[in-house]
Amino acid sequence: MWMLPFLCGLGASILSAWGVGGGTLLLLVMTLFLGVDQRTAQGINLLFFLPTAAAALVFHWKNGFLDKPTLKRSVPWAVVFALAGAWAATAVDVELLRKPFGVYLLASGVSLLWPSKKKSEEPPEDSPEKKL
Image: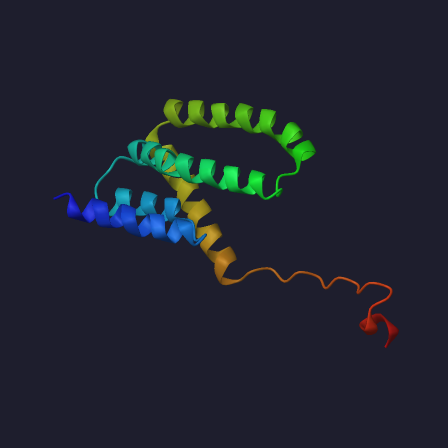
């Protein structure tokens, strides 16, 4: 009975390590196949995400990939909106949460299937492409 949840968690963690978004997949598996309530699944998803995010933060910090001014501006707002989201998730009926979350998942899937094309950047002044 524990094997299916174990394999789902293992698969989601492997996909998450590859940058696929294993947490979202884990949330879908828990709600659709394992019969877990959406709020409980979201809580488990957060517990799944926190160690991964903490490890990523440490490695990005060590490699100098964190922009400190951006962190100083964004962290207070992130905390405020995380608390507001947590309050909303517990205050609102689960059935009201399902539809917007489903729309979000559909929009995310569509954006992955049909990514927007980035505008090409101008080549630098001294590049061979610019001289042509």
